[in-house]
Amino acid sequence: MIDVLPIFLRIAGAGLILLAFLHIPIGRQLGWREDGKKLQAANEAIFHVHTFFICLLLVIMGLPCLLEPTIFLTPTRAGAWISWSFAGFWTLRLYFQHFVYPASLWRGKRLETILHGVFTLIWIALSALFTACGALQAGWLD
Image (cartoon, rainbow, N blue to C red):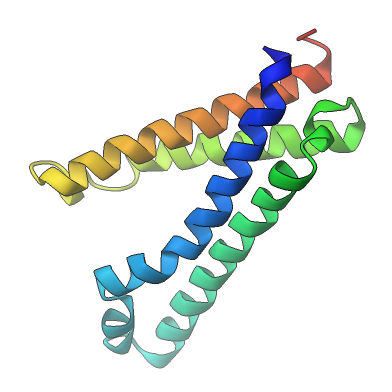
């Protein structure tokens, strides 16, 4: 299993960077700019700034996975911190997918239901991948 972790990390890294850039067409499709104009100026600015930083975070998470996956695989205190932090982040994201977003956003809507399922699988995969890296860092996997 450990032999495939670098491959999975590189795939995850490329996927995270892709997801960051997909926010551009996603935002257009969902009409974020138009919706933002309906908000008070401060709220509109906060929305756009937060979206930018979400994308930046995705790139920051994706780059080490893509370019230097050994960071997650060579046991160090920093490697353990980053692995467990990423595992916690994506596990919380999975939780929010099911318990914070209302089901009315996707239930009974074909495309939204498919996307909900796809992103559920992605969040599970990322949670499992970084948990495996954390377990490797802790010496639980050989």
